[in-house]
Image 1 (cartoon, helix red, strand yellow):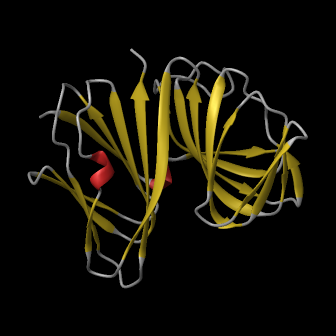
Image 2: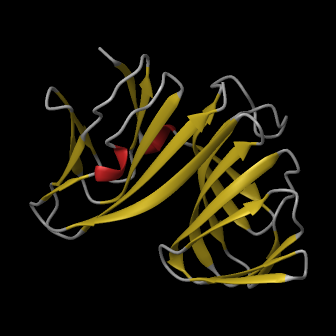
Length: 208
């Protein structure tokens, strides 16, 4: 197979408290790294913001992407830049920034070590019993590429290159790691729930 696959069930996520609420770690790379030790290359998580005003932990060695899943947030970076985020809006920022947060929400976070990797995230909506092709993923990638599919709302079936299928229950995550060069990487998502599906896709590109 061209890829390694791993499904992470929602009951296996690591949950911890932070100053503004609770954080749920979906995946971290390398797998034996620890968030507290700041020795990871990337980390995917979701956090609840439960107080009207909070301060983000500064992470000088990392860039961050934050997407709001529920609620609304206002981010203020270094008392200069103010960003208003509604559901499925996102903000890319330097983890070294002094970031103040106003509002209550649930968010989705990708943390990326500077000079080690870059990434992007996108939310997809899929109607009941419909399929959606993820066109952004069709292209040429080297052997340093990780794809993450998070079944935020709904159960979904994932088809990769027409010969590999996975079923994710709501809240589960699929990791796909490329093992060699590939020029045609196609993914179809099928909503298997009675309501509209919401799926979050993350792509992580390694520097070397």
